[in-house]
Amino acid sequence: MTSTIVLCFIAGVLAANATPHFVKGITKEPFPTPFSPAPLPNLIGGWAMYLLAALLLLWAHTGRHPLAALVAGALGVLLMGVFHAHIGAFGKKPTVIR
Image 1 (cartoon, rainbow, N blue to C red):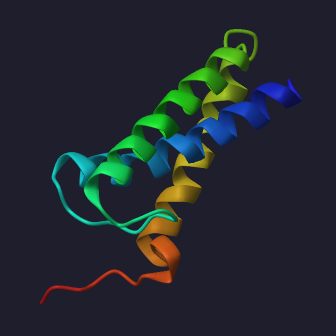
Image 2 (image 1 turned 60 degrees about the vertical axis):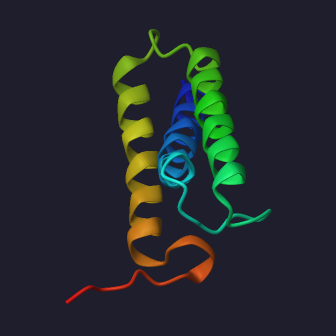
């Protein structure tokens, strides 16, 4: 069960982190990455994170412990969501539009 929890948590973090990168990539907007803020590296990075998250969920055998898998994945998504909403990518504070 421990491996299911760990893999699902990491999958949740990866999938949540993939979302802004993938969206910024397909909308051709810059977003910070370790490689470049350009849209194409964001698109590829987001796609790769989605792929890794799917592989981790496959390897986690979520059917054996479905509740633990759901909770761990949800916590991973929440953690990454809070990170992006509060700290932001590479310490970039979100701009407030008034």
